Length: 616
Image 1 (cartoon, rainbow, N blue to C red):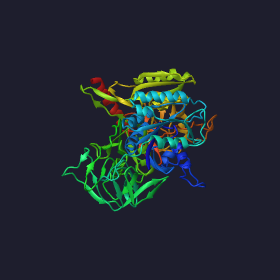
Image 2: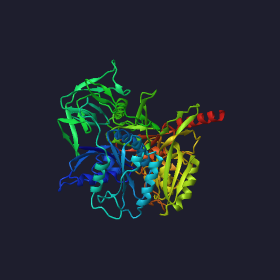
Image 3: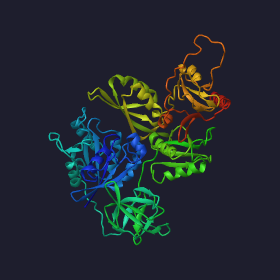
Image 4: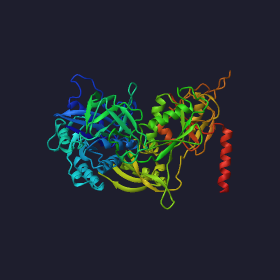
């Protein structure tokens, strides 16, 4: 007996914590076993940021029934992970925060799940929050289901009220739960057992990948039909239309060398598996997401995995700055290119294209976080490269008009900051679609905004709301080009020579600027070292030392008191830079720089641009 279920929700609504409790209460850990919090977030980046980035499999046994559980990411930028995982399961648990209610990502993944005909279970989580309103959220979830054209069976799904931190669930708020037994029972009663035919010819779709230095690439997926044993000869079919494979198509034939299933957090080696189970299969070289395994006698291909197209792209460029090669192990164009194309094997929502320049590649993804996680992963692996400002991917409409991606932006802010938020969003061509005041002091506003309009807004938003605002967004649709948008309002300070930053030089500059560097940092000509208080860029000398003299004057020995520099993270840098700037990413540092390092070259380019503008 098997059940396959995915847990989907908006970021930070408690999915991974709930999976922790399910594993504990189902006996996946020994009584004295030391287990980290959010044990499913095994990636170092996931632990640091507190978000799930990669979908992961686990399994528990409850009353003799094996439940395969897939923990999915909650951020809209990693929707590609969710889209392919949903093909492996027969039901979904939709987790919703008891105070926040359905959020943009909840809508996105719920639409995908309902469209595939999966049976939902709704868990209204964090009922122990002081501002929880489970009855209101219950009605909002039903409204969401109706908006998404759910069937009568899907609307008639069970609702549970849970606290993932405490590990409790109940079907009635009047009777508090003591454990997760009602949740497990709802899974057994609601999620249908796989309807696959265990006696038919073998068939399995590859939904995700794993890698072992000993076994190589391994395929993870649900067996749709038949059985498989270690040593069986199978055919790995190329991507294409569903149905029988044609005569001339290239098919890889090989034997299954290893077979695993999941038990708790471990992969258990087995000799045989049958239809309905989620397995890990090794022995083939051409494993790719979306391909089909089939028996040699009946080569029938399943429908591939459809993933929504990326909306943002950026250029990855080989580092050619004065400090190139100081930090990184992998700095050549061949190494960077190979790493980007290797990422495509797992990251189905990513696109990589060669450009006219041999040291530049166009990389497209779902959003700034999607691209930023790739950059952060590469720098931790020892890669060194440069990145351009993100740009939106436009399309041509039916009548030849230019279309650009629009996002649904949802903002929760205290009432006193409403005015400043709306004032800042106005020039970014936003359109308010909904506004609600639940009476908790927070106002929820929903906007339709061009994806370009979000560039650089997050840091401005946090400053305007004194860190109290919450901002979420997801891809909505392609719409008409919104025209020119206001860019960064302030210029930057640019180093005019190479050297080490000196405190004395910063002391004279900090009155008119916010610095990005600290005394002792190495800088080069063309490197961005701070933000100017005025709209124009300014070349400055941050290496200037105090002249020594044998004459003492009043105040000559005053200490220089410096404000701490602004911390530059990858996400902040991607939002901040302008078209004529690049981010230099190395394992130890993130620097901002101008495309043209020499001041004379920048002046010539500015004069040429001005002449072109005047002529037009």
